Each structure stands twice: as structure tokens, then as C-alpha cells.
Figure (cartoon, rainbow, N blue to C red):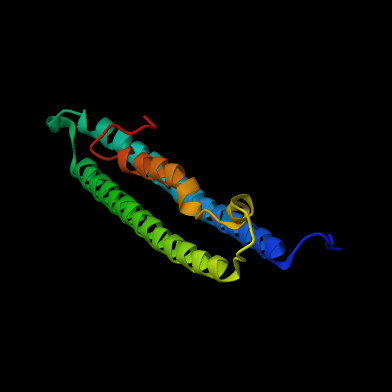
Length: 162
């Protein structure tokens, strides 16, 4: 049962806050899935590199056609995994930009909606309570850290999983 002292505006404000929190959690879950997939790809790349290193340490005289073929396959597999990872990083960046645009649009919409409902007799404290901060501000540091992790892992910079 709703508290009779709450106004419709208070309830709508709480509902908007809950919706924003839900959206932040859904986005964070998505980001964690990207990071999980990235870690798996990095581990696969690391294992393939180790296997290739073992084969490449053999003297050329001892390498048979089968060993050379295996080296070529490992190089091809590493290349495919790196391409998958590059696509993953690009996709994550695209999602981050899309989410930022959505947050800006939602913030503008809520600001317009709240201004229409604002009554002249309200104090500044009551207005602040109804204002909703876009989740992009809260999520920016998480997204930036996640993207930096993805860019640094198995790229030009040393892999953090090594």
C-alpha cells in the first residue's frame, strides 16, 4: 500500500530512479559478459602462443612437413582469435557510445518532463530530489576501466593475463 503522504510526483521520481538502476545493472551485466569473453579469448591466444613457441624453438633441421604445417595452423588460429577479440573491442565501444546517446536523450526527456510538472511553490530541495542523474555518469568509470582492460589485453601492450 502506498504511503498517503507521497505525491504522484514522488512516486514517479522513485519509479524513474528504479528504472535507471535497472538499466545500469543490465548494462553492467552486458559489460561483464564482454569482459568474460575477452578473458577467454586472451587465454586461448596465450595457449596458442605457447604451443607455437614450443614448435618454433625446434631447430629447422628437425622440423618435418607436419611440424611446419602445425606451425602454420597455429598462426592462423592465433590470427582468427585476435580478429575475434578486435571485433569484441569494437563492439563494446559501439555499445558504450550508443548507451551514452540513450542516456543523454533520456536525461533531456526527464528534464523536460520534470520542468512541466514543477510547481512554482516548491523549494530547491524538493526539485533536487526529483531530478534524475543519468546513469552514464555513474557508469562512465566502469565502462572506461573495462574498455582499457580490453584494449590492453593481448594487444600491443603486454597482456594482463600473462
